[in-house]
Amino acid sequence: MKTCTRCDKERVVPITLDDSMEVCGHTFTANLPAEKCQACGQIAIQGHDLKLFELRIACELAKAGMRTGDSFKYLRKSLGMDAKGLGELLDVPAEFVGYWETGKWPVDPRAHAVLCSFVLGKFEHRPSSLDCLAVLREPRKLARKVRLTLIDALGQAAKTLQFGSAARTAPGLA
Ligand SMILES: [Zn+2]
Image 1 (cartoon, helix red, strand yellow):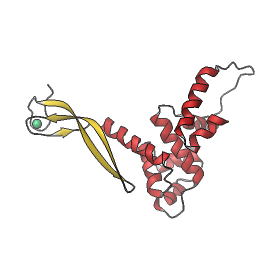
Image 2 (image 1 turned 135 degrees about the vertical axis):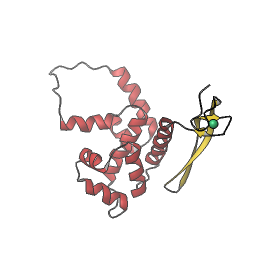
Image 3 (image 1 turned 90 degrees about the horizontal axis):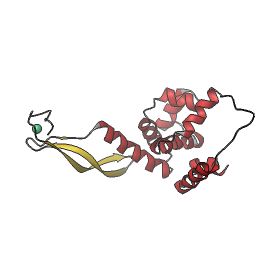
C-alpha cells in the first residue's frame, strides 16, 4: 500500500468518487479515480484526472455552442493556452482575446468556432485544427503525385459527422 502524505501511514487505497465543478452557471459532475487514506481520511485526486475532467467540461461547452466570454476563457484555459498564444494562432492581437473574455467585445464567432475545434480535437487526441494553423505558418512541400488511402479518411469523416458541431463537420464535408 502507498504511504499517506499527511499521516505517513501505509493505508492509502484507490477509490472513485463523484466530483463536481461549477462552470459558466452549470454544475458538472463526474466519477473520478482518487486515492484515500483509510487512517486519516485524506483524499487525493491526481492533477491529470482533474485536467481531463476540465477538458471534458470544455467539450460540453464547445458542443453546446456557448459563445460567452467566460466560456471562451474556460475553453482556452482547458487547452493550457495563454491569450498571447491563442492570439497568434488566430492571427489577432492578444488584447482581442482579453476583450472577448471580459465581455468588452462580443466573442468573434469564427474565433469561437476555431477554439471549439481545438478543444474537441484535443479531447479526441486528434488536434487537426491546430495542425492546420501551424502548417499555414510553415507550409510543407506537397509532392506532385500523392497517393491517398480513403478507408481511414471515410471512417474519420463518419465520426466527425456524429459530433454534430458546425466547426467540426465543415472540414469533413469539404
Ligand atoms: Zn493519512
